Length: 186
Image (cartoon, rainbow, N blue to C red; front, side):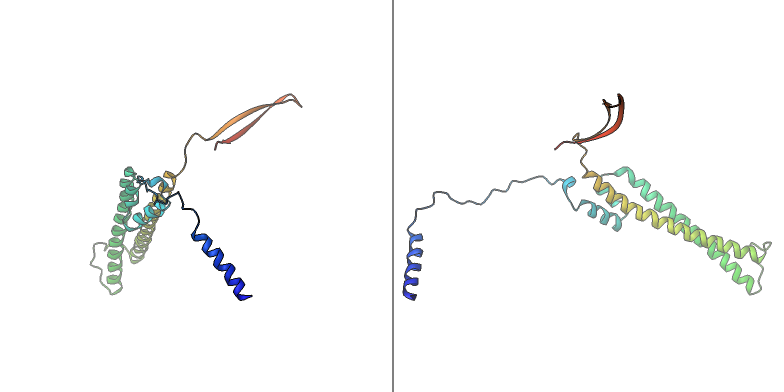
């Protein structure tokens, strides 16, 4: 039984060696150089967001939205200006209040009572914190804008997608029906 099975296996394996030669030859496919299109790059939005997170405005440069750069730097710059201005006012009122608690009244606000100095200190602190929150918000908005702008560059705006009003005559009650029709051509 084993010799018969071995003989059949050898016959079939030898038959493959004596077949016809293959007339088709295999060659490696030729890779064509294609130009890199950022609009079809699926990583483009995340790359733009990363660039904006590293350096504000760099994502807008990556998306070639150069007109947004002054808005980004203006918003962040104004927010930081008010943060540092309110920080210096807070420190000034805090130092005056500390000196008043120790008994000295020889400051430039000698005519103002302690309660108003304390309120001015709290107002400067609140405005400082608010300007910091606005600056961080503008920074986050910069990142989101770069991401959304890169996504919208990939959006198909061809004529295959249309929205148009439609007017249909209803023969059952002899009146016109108004509606919207959406067309998408493949």
